[in-house]
Length: 164
Image (cartoon, rainbow, N blue to C red; front, side, top):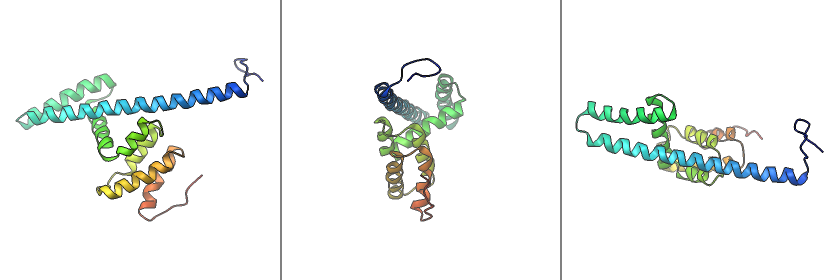
């Protein structure tokens, strides 16, 4: 059997090898995303520390904006978006540690992380948020990212029929 576009031989062993390689690359990509999020959270901590050291509110805001502008330039986005990314990363690591660990381990993808974090918006009770995270991760590890948002409805008793 050959691939009609490249005329490359395709056999059971090469398909297996490609699947293994693809799986490993997805795991590595997830770990890279975790590294980026860790760096953003660390930058957020620096911004907060630097801003806290400044006495006047206007100078505090200017110091935070200067760092966000530098990060925004590196990311190719506006300073406000850079600030949001830093804040979201810090929130993820603080409020969803199991989700962050699963991403670092390559058990889930960045889309799962975004949906879990978005699904937990408004959950201020740590126990409720932890239950949500646990339930969402159980599904995220087995299914595509679009299933994780349904977990929030389940936790509040609305339990829609889950799609396969």
